Amino acid sequence: MADFERARALLREFKGDSYLFGTDVLSQVGGVVSAAGKNAVLVRGTFSGSDDHVAAIRKSLVESGVDLVAEITGARPNSPREDVSRITAGLRASEADVVVSFGGGSTIDAVKAAEVLRTLGGEIDAYFGTGLVTEALRQADKALTTHVAIQTVASSAAHLTKYSNITDIATGQKKLIVDEAIVPACPVFDYEVTYSTPPSLTADGGLDGISHSLEVLYGAVGKPGYDKVEEVAGASIDLAVNHLPRAIDNPQDKQARKALCLATDLGGYCIMIGGTNGGHLTSFSLVDVLPHGRACAVMNPYYTVFFAPAIERPLRLLGRIYRDARLTKVDMQALQGRDLGIAVAEAMFELARRVGCPTRLSQVEGFGRRHIDRALAAAKNPQLKMKLQNMPVPLTAEMIDDYMGPILEAARDGDLTRIKSVK
Image (cartoon, rainbow, N blue to C red; front, side):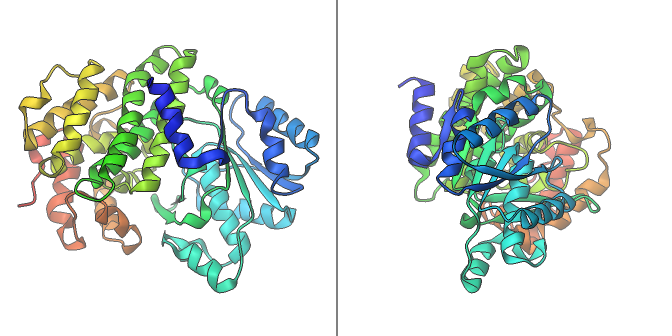
C-alpha cells in the first residue's frame, strides 16, 4: 500500500466516517454543521487569506439552512488565558446550539476550553489535568455543545484530540486539559487551506507532528499495543521527515503539503493512543521564546539520548527512516544503547538544520537560565504529572533536578555528553 493510501486508511480506522478531510471539502461544512444544529457561532482565525475561506464556510452554512448567529475572533498563538475568557463570553452571548472553530491549534484549543467554561463555569485552573471535565459534566448532568473543528495548519491535530493547551502569558507557562469530553465531535481539514502556509509555520507544524508521534512511540515501549503505535507513528514520521524539507523548499508542492497533513493527523492519532512526554513537557516552559513545534524539536534529540537504553526498538525504526531520507549515513543496526540514541539525535539535528530550525537552546533569542529554572519547576507540578509518567525512563519529582537539569543544560549548550543516564 502506498504511503498516502496507508495513511488515509489509518485515519479512517481512527475516526471512521466522522472525519471530513482532503482537498476542496470546505464546501461540505454546512452539511456537517446542520446535522448538529441550526444556530451556529463561528470562532475564526484571521491569518492571511482566511477571509476567502471563511466566505466559503458562510456560503456552505447558508446553503444548508444554518443561521450563523455570531462570529468571534480566534486565539493568538499558544491560546492565552485572556483569549479563552474573551471567547467564552462570546459563546455565552451567542446562545448557539453548535460551535464552529476555524483556525490552527491555538484557536481550536481555546474553543475547547471556552466551551468547557461556558457550560460548567468556574475558572480554567479547575480543569487542568486529566479527566476533570468529564467528572464535572457528570456531576452537573450536562453536556458540551457540539464542536465542529476546522483545522487550517498541518501541525497539532487539535481538531482530532482530547488536548487543550492554555498559556498564562504573565508567567510564560503553558498548562494542559486532557479529557475525552473535549474531543471535537465533527473534525474537518481541507488540505488546500494549508497551501499558503508560510515556511516558518510549515516547519513548526511539521516538527510538532513528528514530536507527537516520536514521543508516543518512545512511551509505548514495553506496553500493550506497542505494535499499533509503531505502525501509526512510523507512517507519520516517515511522511513528515521525507516531505517537510520539500514543502519548505517549494511551498507550492501539493504532494508535500498533502503528506504533511496526513503525517500530522497521524500524530494526532498517536496522542490519542498514548501520551507525549519530555519534549512537550519542556516546551510548555519555552512559550515566550519559541513556537511550540520548534521547542519540542529542539528538546527531543536530547531526551532521545536520555531514553536511549530503554527505547532501542523505536530507535532502530527511526534510524531506518532518517537514513532512507538521507539525513544520516550511519549504519544504525550496528549500534545499541546510548550510541544508537546519539546517532538518531544527530540525524534529528540534520533535519532541523535543513528546515531552518535551531538545534540548541543557546541559538534561541531571549533564552536564559530562567527558562531552565521554569522548566524544572513545571516538571514538579502535579498538573503536568502525566508527562513524567509517559516517559520510557520515568522520573519522579525528586529526580527532576538530578536528571532533567543536565538534559536542559545539554540542550542549552548542544552537548550530548552532559546527559546523565538513570542507573
